[in-house]
Image 1: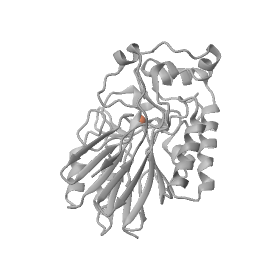
Image 2: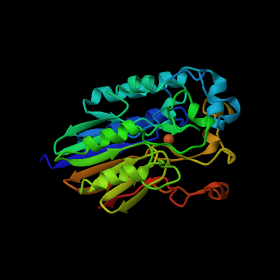
Image 3: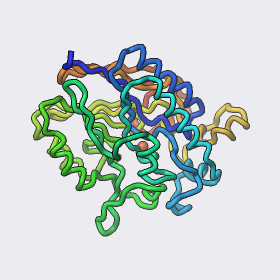
Image 4: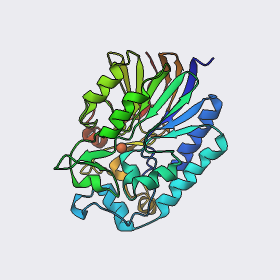
Length: 320
Ligand SMILES: [Fe+2]
């Protein structure tokens, strides 16, 4: 029995952007109960953890969604996040949180760690015959190659890729030394990808050197994709809520004006009708993924504005 583990994994809820975050969280909780999962994993970008007035991002560097929230100078998003996180308390299940880039948009990393109730920004958790390693990839290198931790949106002032800092690389080498099966969680994908991490090769070498088949879960890109390379299976989990169309790709919507005022970022997203997440069953190194959701028919305008072949309002089933 210890060789079997069942996880509900979700990512990128973005409760600051999506209009029905509460419904989506309720769906996650009900599914966790119905599927008798052993634990829940959140791969980041759950919502805002601070008042949207404090920023280290120059106004001219602020992405459109960031600027909308910054101009509101509001604590309602922070309060919404807390309310939603509280919902998980009654479940009596472990929930492992991973930091996403937007978790530090308007606050320090320490605040995000505290709000989520994490023991640290990176850690591992042993359950049954599995070790789940949670990494924090929210760092960039400045012009002097110093590792800078994301805080108050400072990362939007520059364009460098995320990196896993030296301290975590060294820690990871020790953390993988176990008899247990390994699962790795990080907001950015750990393989070679424009939106992955700059030092992915160092990390992949550490993981491959274990000689084990490892499941690596990530979010961030709001797509559903599986890439298997040697012993590593990179499962990119789709967002619970939407695909980001783009800064300059605002679409015409039918939402009433006062609804849009309350949810001003809706015209920039492809909103998923169903909340997306996956139930992952592991039996030693064998993985079965049960996805959910349905395809939606896109408007011509939306089709034109989607730039990625992996965009889908579904999370597929997989077996590997
Ligand atoms: Fe993200």
